[in-house]
Amino acid sequence: MSQFIKLKRGFDINLAGKASNKVENPTQPEKFAIKPFDFMGLKRPKLLVEIGDKVQAGQPLMYDKMFEGVNYVSPVSGEVLDIVRGKKRVLLEIVIKSDNEFKCLQFKKYSVSDINNLDRQTIIEAMSKTGVWPNMIQRPFGIVADPKTEPKSIFISGFDSHPLAPDYGVLLKDHQKELQAGINVLRKLTSGLIHFNVNGSGEMPTVYSALNNIQLNKFTGPHPVGNVGVQIHHIDPISKGDIVWTVNPVGVVQIGTLFLEGIYDASKLVAFVGSEVAEPKYYKTYSGACIDTIARENIRNSHVRFVSGNALTGKRIEPAGFLGFYDHMITVLPEGDKAEFLGWITPTFQKLSFQRAFGLLSFLNSKKEFALSTNARGEPRAFVQTGVFEKVTPMDIFPLYLVKAIMAEDFDDMEALGIYEVIEEDLALCEFVDVSKHDIQDILRQGIELIQTS
Image (cartoon, rainbow, N blue to C red; front, side, top):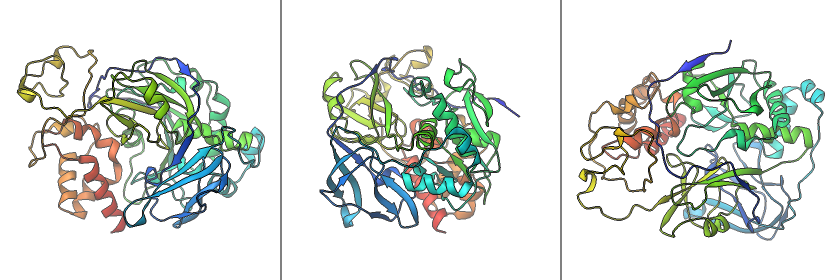
């Protein structure tokens, strides 16, 4: 039965530079890359290509030795230009020089009726072989799902509440057939429900209007209302031993396209946003695209930081860096490396604060858009007990005590305090509002890895 859930705790970060609905089809970049660190849980990647090899879109570039059937594939056709390694020869990037033809390997096609008759094992083998399986994320831990397990349910968040997040109505426009086909495929992977969650405070995108084989739930409230982990917590909470799979709607479309057309389609719309973007809008490109062309043509100045993803959880990349596998936006922020006179106590309307701190008057105008820089406005110090973490975490957990338990490596307390229910994005607001300036997301991932290996 569908549910309507209203959340009160959280905080909306209203940044300047949201994308208009304009979509541009630019000249595609010369280079694309697949980055192993995009895929949580990928510990032992095994290379299948060498520099100079010719590849097509959908051709395997590597696999995880833990799950040898799951391939990670090339987003475009061309030539392997470089294999970048870091310390201890850790694999960082596989760079592909595109041939601008975007030729795809051809896999087996299925009609809508065929999909309804496929068995679970056939679907898993097809998704693993062709490169779409990494769209399946397993909770707890937020890692690429183990195809040998069966989840109790599958969750899809049909909206994003992060700062400057793209509109899924734009990202998924004209893909209703593929979206429904993808849902039909996912329906075969669980004996439980597929929960499709939408924003209950606005008009639902047209592409969602006629979907079936789902339980449609509505959520309202401030960020992180769009986080799938928050939605799981309120509909089908995770206990020790439970497994839930999640997938982004764009990933569902990619799965549906594979079965309907027999190709690995890495094309996507990417929102180029932020206060330093001259004209925030959407660009048509492919997963792993180099952002150099866009970065040169559409920013106000050069002293900025590029983030693949959103401002809270995204990863910093260079001006000639590559779009992340799961990212549908590039955020451009002013680089905050300059000291300010009187620091945070300067009276101003230009700074945003969750708390009504001295000198921060932003709470007087909640609709104002802010051009926030990357300045942390402080240094790490001992944790200050404020109770503010609980105010921005709409879940029945104690985030501050969870973080302290992780730092103390107290496994029993970590489990009791809810580590199975959260990943980095669920506590990203805690990091934003933390007056003690700790890297909450990094600490949480360390705790998750401790629990996984215990």
